[in-house]
Image: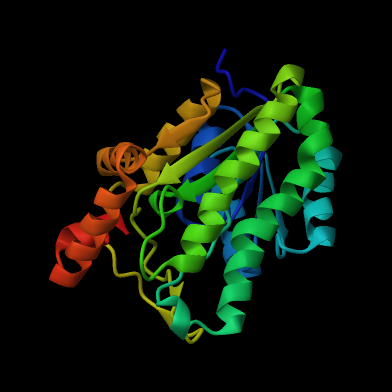
Length: 270
């Protein structure tokens, strides 16, 4: 029997991108899924696509940074499926721009979704995950392994997930809970994806894809099954992380040099 057969998973940001790809992979392996996102129409379309696969799926639209919504999503999982085994905190927003140029609204929006949303969803789900000895997963980024210029708030919020996950793991591993972090590289985008510019306007992503959504979903699901604490998605991310641990100053100098030289490598690392 597949490990995920009849397990119940919540995926935030589950209407598109890596979130939707992960929901599809879990459903393919027999899990029941609850997806949530802000865009109601796109969420409904994604739910219908999952149903066409034969999935047991519930969709709940709303903002993960609101406590009432976090409670509502978890309640939907329990009311419909009777348990909760997996929470994948995937919802996130990306930004580009130097810190001095960011508006206060952009700062707040990034923190609300990328960090506050993870905290509130985790809090709403934690008792059920302890009961099932389940999985609490955070989707971070290579930019969460070390700070990168032009992504200060994104790096800050994604980096904070490491400390959050590690603390929860130390508190609750003795009770059977698995907590882990996935550090995505730059992933292929849906055509309509936009990120926040410094002034709050929406702009197309400007980084080359390192892997497909399906590849990311497959590795995330395997990481959950093996109960690993960390998954760094790309070789260049692993290399950067190891080098940063050995010599932060060298990595800083390399990033600044790559940025000033306008090399493609800088975009891959950031």
